[in-house]
Image 1: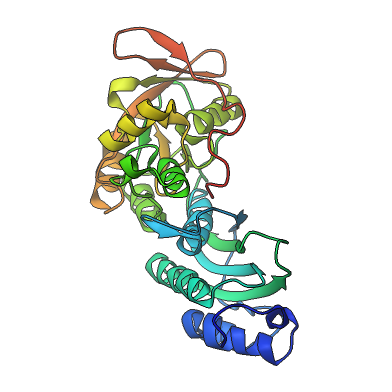
Image 2 (image 1 turned 30 degrees about the vertical axis):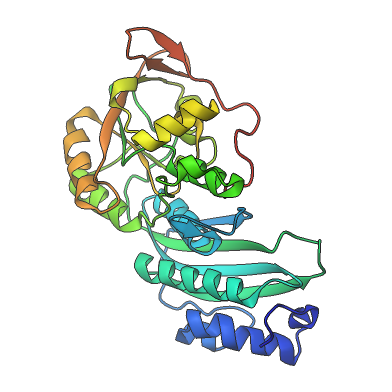
Length: 334
């Protein structure tokens, strides 16, 4: 291959075959993909199924703690897992800009393969388009995932009930601030790294250890505050958070203070919200803490009766409403 991507790599001819064989097949190799049919034949999947799709346009492509490649796997795997499902298979589609460094593409593809192995999923079908310079920003990736639902009942944003405990699996805001710091070259944010991670194994442990869970969500774009507002509206409940209980890393607190950002509205890519009946809260927390991605799990609030809204009990004893995110604090973070 050349040092950079040429337009004919998307033509469907020899150059396309070389790109697929030398880059994608080399990293994603598995029998289902290597059949090279127009679709993947999945003979061992049993319903009900969960399915999710997402497109990734993050800039920069590579950042502390991950890359657009690992993010494209983690994001879709986690979305499928939040429905109480075991992710099994992914598709991936690349839109690549002419002139892209093949070293960068190799790194992104290797990161995707490593993320898929850790999550225990196979990338079984895909597509590659190469567009002229300026038609996209280096790499856009779409992944679609399917998984077998095993939870009964299925967790849903509609299922929060007054008296439920609100749990998070770790510290808030790492991913959003990391991407911003990398994009802008902010040297004082060098201690911050993305939390991008696959949560599917931890979710299985939560559901098997704590029994039925009312709500599972990953607070990605819009962060904890926006995601909880969505849940409050879906379930028509009020949610009260305790500011002192919400884990936020010191470097994120300091960075947000300097930049005028609120960590409760920053994106996370390796954290989940778990809303469970009070009597199952401790079992769910213990399950989270057994995972390498849930060591900082904490109870952060309670579901109550009342208007569909989210409020924060502050450190000084006051209370403020946390509304939906208005506008974009940080664009292009996933």
